[in-house]
Image 1: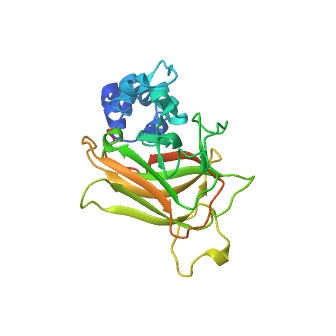
Image 2 (image 1 turned 90 degrees about the vertical axis):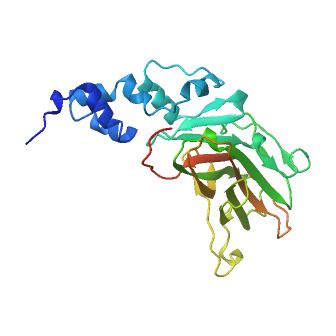
Image 3 (image 1 turned 180 degrees about the vertical axis):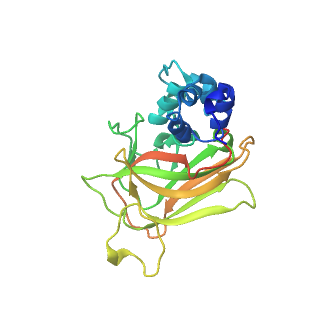
Length: 275
């Protein structure tokens, strides 16, 4: 027996669609006018916005202007907003509605970051932040960031990415293996570690039999390398995640890294939709 969806109350259809994803809900809105009406309602899109979205918007550097919750959802998933005076970037993952954050280079712990002999802090138009970290020269490369688990969406696997460019004017020493580490701070917790290249090496520099990761070019023309992943459980505690890249063993000089920050993104689709 066929079911006439037009006989169902809009609230019932809205409840059904909310069990899917924002992406699936948009596709379902083409099925019938009643589906479209339910999928366009503020009550429906409120379910996909983070429960603390109003407090997040209150921290935005620039006002976020919207008339409907659907419009707000796509504003936050189409481009990032700056929070806390530009010390943090926030957006939503368009397919899942999960929270995404980027820590700017100014908020990271970088070895010798305050010594003008080793790092400088220019403004470049390609960056969402007012300053980026540009490496002049170091032999000890150590970059570390921290994020509180309660800031993130619960019941979600996240990956941390170093976001950067390599200077076309002068660069060297970046085509060597570096080590990464992502873990919750505390005793007895598991760590996720990788061996990575920041710059694709010539074949003769790759250790025989080694397993490694290479960077990927992003749509925004920056590059990224995954540092590791972690599962954020309930997300209501005071846990803190450390994300790190380090190359300190070879001892040779490195130059030309332009660092925007560390971005934390949902790694996979999850069943729990609450953010």
